[in-house]
Length: 500
Image (cartoon, rainbow, N blue to C red):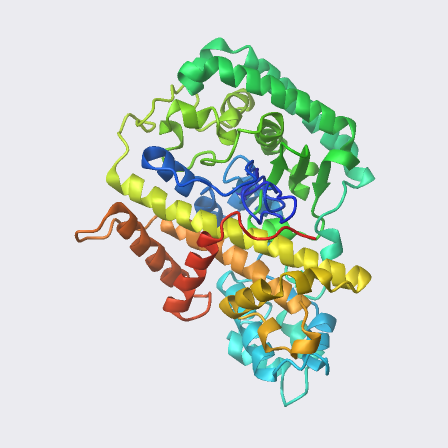
């Protein structure tokens, strides 16, 4: 499954999961360590909270300098891990792509629509202090578009660095590709080391009991299965492993993904290159757990609320828990020497109602993030089909859904001339920034206080989500529309199409 860049998902073969949490890749089982291919069930009780809230390592990543680089798979499903591309932030299309959309006489996108979209993107970038210019987004847009039909490259370059890939979206062609020759030797060494860590974990009788309890023998067998699958993948990287040199993953907090059914694994470039060897190995262990057994999902990322307090049935089916023993060997464990006890957090405190409600709220936004990530992967694939082959069939096949999403996210598609409508690079950066926004909102949910009043757990969680979305404040600048977008995405968790 995928990781939320903490590591969000596992590729969904037809729809990129962004279609769901399958290792965070294609829909279905795409890349987010999402091992499922069907709709997710609606768990109840502790497991529900864990699933809903799991994958939230992003909070620390969004508030601690450099933390994103450490949030590798295994953490949120490492959406954040994937953020490992050092300070990656919301991006803009390159000037040529922006100008093409602005001046295309067939698309006929209203100037006001282009300017609104660019303003929103710049505003989100400004919130993360990634612009060259200190001017307000609206001021920058006025300079880029100084008169009707006029677009200024000088003003664009003054606000953004055209050579900085963390600010400028270059090409969809580099976002899902094979590992470069220069990176293969390093990755193979990391994969071998991860396998050795898993082998050691298999023989750690006391450790298996401390983490998995009565499911220790099941966990042992799954470590072995994951280790074997990882070795097979290392033997043929082109067949089993992809990465992202366009840096889409770090941008959207996608930590990577792996899919058992296809034996595919997608890794962040930082993981492939071993920028942080310990985290690369932990991430590989996490994804190997998905590869090794179809029932190993992402029910809660490493270190998220009540992670250590999950029940045994959930732990043995949760990829992040397979990171714990290897992390102890690597010296990066947050629970060294701790015995995981269902319902009891590290330190001995019991799970509270606030923990439970936050889990529900967190899971709701996690599902929204996952679906947004699936949408991003799907739409990116539709765009790629047009760029490489002028193939409009994928767009036509799901046109109604694309138009619906365009209206919800303030993309340009629903404003284009019907006969020539298609996804532009501007639209891809818009959906990319929405995925990122979902990740940030999810991190804010984790600190929301328990609402007062006679509310059910679900009702209280809904209030938390609404408040966190308001605090982010850079989505659509309309609280009602912002919340509607979050809810629509969560409702489409693991149901969106995968990339063509």
